[in-house]
Image (cartoon, rainbow, N blue to C red; front, side, top):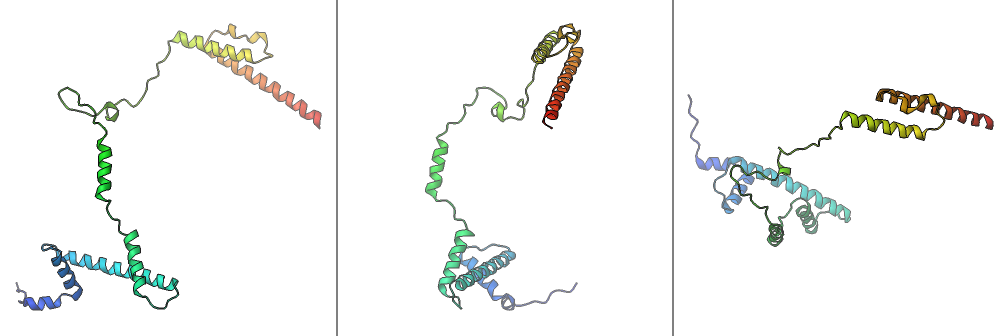
Length: 202
């Protein structure tokens, strides 16, 4: 296998772009000694994008002010706008301390005196019951309540023949059938009366 030619270290440094060397010097000045080579490239891309955005904003401010060239005030205004909207400063330590103090005022729930696995309250557990059971009444009570409801409905409906008395029904099914028949008869009578009234206005 062919060995790569030995290239002097000084020649390798000359092949590194100037901006990359500047970024490496900035990292060294910040105390960053151990980093991957792609870190400097990513920082260069960020710096290039940030510079382009600032110049575009400064150009827009200069055009809005009616100036032909960009001056230092336009650049400062563009940088200030970027800092205000693009970079969010962390909250002050005093503000965080105040929030922590208010939160710590709330007492913790008591720890139960029992052995084994300590679970949160039942309403916070997945094993909690998330449904409600509706008990069914006994069959005799259901029939009596159904007879009572239909008898009340029949008393509210007028003009029904005595042959269809609710008390003569033998089962809830017959009661429901006769009740529907009465409702149908009353609807037909009401529609007929409405039609006669409409004919009187023609």
